[in-house]
Image 1: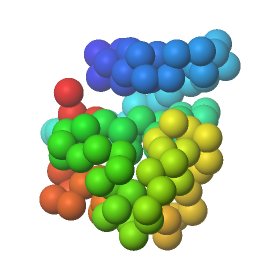
Image 2 (image 1 turned 30 degrees about the vertical axis):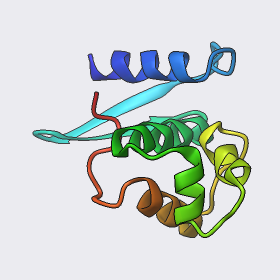
Image 3 (image 1 turned 120 degrees about the vertical axis):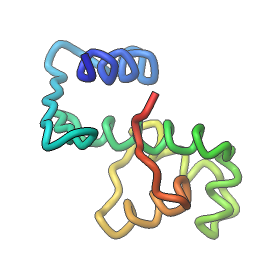
Length: 107
């Protein structure tokens, strides 16, 4: 069920970018703790960033400002899946969109 919800979010968020080769795997660890693996991690990370930004109530411009950038386009490239962040950059992006570090894909 959770996998179906995430796939639906992926299709809704990235119309035309999800093809038949795209796959997701759900790992359950313990109650209320799970992990996701995708054949295209760039899109999964983009979805995570977008969902958390929306949950936090920030605009793309506000997140760019929190990252110290005057250009929202730079951040938007991560969120639309155009580029994948390094691990160091991902940590900064997650802090900017999720200052309270809540769950990323909660509906």
